[in-house]
Length: 256
Picture (tube, rainbow, N blue to C red):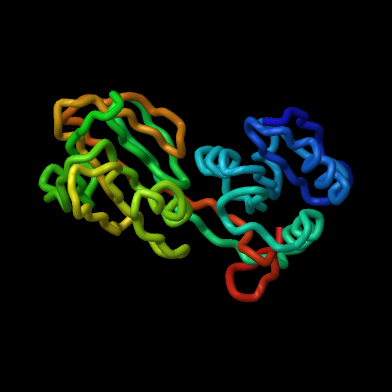
């Protein structure tokens, strides 16, 4: 993440820029031209709005549980068609629509995390087939599995993530605004694999075969779990992102 942390000048609303692992000096300079100063580094999430550069920035903001509106730049989510400067002006004026993308809390015995896009469980050794079961009542002892299958792994994608790896693996696109996730086997041991659309309220994936499985949330490793482990996914808040087009009129619009 870019580091600065200076306080904004004057009475203009504060704006942060988050860009983990990226050179974002140009974006920071353009935001500064509009608001006078920019919060970066850890201070960025204390701003009244934030510019997220890249998917990793969106994932980081979702994991931090921010409630401030987010303007995406160079992400897989729809970005405003306006120039960045115009988008910031409209955002601060409340003249934008905000889409709420659900965030998943991932609970495992080896570590917890958050995912805006997808949670993946993949056999820890290459070319190794594991077994998985999926249930739609995470943590419930009497939950009946929705499905059992053998595969190299499985990915659970939110509406924000369903156009990514899950789609490439043959899964459906989940419409923005729906409270559902796509469960898609990775390299399944089947000639006619299934996939499932499940409620986001609570989903669990259990490792059922004698292979350790690596768990990641938006690409961040959470640890490796042995057979018999249940990984629970629970809807936990939303990330509020400026919708494509940048102009209010069809969704939620707010003044900051």
